[in-house]
Length: 116
Length: 116
DNA sequence: CGAAAATGAAACGCTTGCGTAACGGTCCGC
DNA sequence: GCGGACCGTTACGCAAGCGTTTCATTTTCG
Image (cartoon, rainbow over all chains, first blue to last red; front, side, top):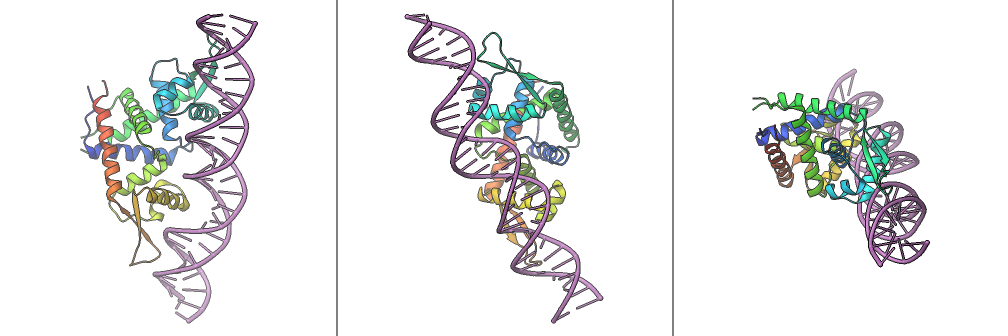
């Protein structure tokens, strides 16, 4: 069942969620970082630097830096792949799951408040 | 009529919209900038630097800089208030409206593609 | 008037992210 | 085994955003 939105609802939802996120969250992730984080948590693993770079349409150092930042925040983790030690496998963390869970709740709450 | 979303749909929607926006749009606005832009276009004017700063919970220079950046992109415009020449009134632009219209379409499209 | 308040912008030093290019470690085919 | 390809990281110079502080302009009000 798809999500049917009017133009007003679509932008209104994005507006309120962004606003609330700016007000509440000091971390202030980039749009790119958020896209990476969601990709990691919503798409079945394994995830690699190269794969994420290709999916996002950005260069590898962009992914490396985003993982540095989000790793420092505890939102993701990195582990060497033992089967091919050139690869790095990106792992989810409890904190990251919690973070996205809260963020999802924020979207849902603001969605409920959307007028027709 | 509110927008009812499951947790999976909420995050999935945000995921795909972010992903597509990263891939397509070279401008890569900050979450703060996006919040400011949406505030300007979705909330009835007039908008001032001070007012936006209070709404977003940030300092005034943050707003000034965001308006500098988005002004250079043609997304907003600034005009001195003639009735109180200390104030600056933020104006919408055709390009800005177009930008948000496209962004709204993106949200709607990705919403339609959301599975239950 | 003239002093104090208010508004937005500019200055400053700092941090963070970017793209390009170069680098070390690892795998693979010959 | 060894040369080349592959993967992620690091280095570099640069641009952009941040918070705090200071400033110029304008208004307000005693």
